[in-house]
Image (cartoon, rainbow, N blue to C red; front, side, top):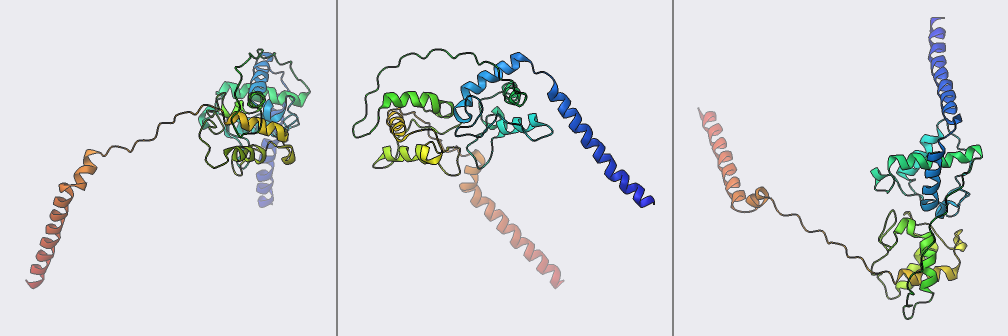
Length: 275
């Protein structure tokens, strides 16, 4: 009877704690979110997330977010995904602690906005500034596609990850020299098929993405016109005074001292053995 009573307490206490946690979590998220925080999250989503997840969170090259999140604390689930990304997928880490651009407060605003879809609420997103006309881009010889149309596609699809000048953000630096006899084919393949085991998804319609073959050619033509960024080459670390001392005469002297010590020790033990 004592064993049964102890076992029932062992099962009953965690059960009560789990129920309490679930009730507390649902109570927290039943509260009406601050409209100002939701509006901030809506703006961040429109500028950074909609390109992959769709303007209404319905999914594009990224996952669907406008859904019910099956979790006791969906806020912690979504927060963890935003901050740390998802390994093995195209979702990068957006938290500053992981090298991303978002502060903790921005992550909280994004979480609040994304979870507002669970209750059916969808705030109006403030219109973004009207784009200004850019100088015409001269197409490169022997490269198919219109770089001017590609610039528009880049601004609406690629800037979020790769930066306005292709310098890299949470995505790779594109303003570089592309190796190969046909760099245009290399860029086209990267855009169309993505890069396995990286954050770069496939953008071609044949692979489930949103871009046509012509749009990929236009994007390629633009990417190859990006001005190259200069990257400082890492300099070899200067040798410390200690390491250079050991590499020179100091190391030889230390070796001779140790050798003499070993010989003297051997001689001492040999004499004691004779006596």
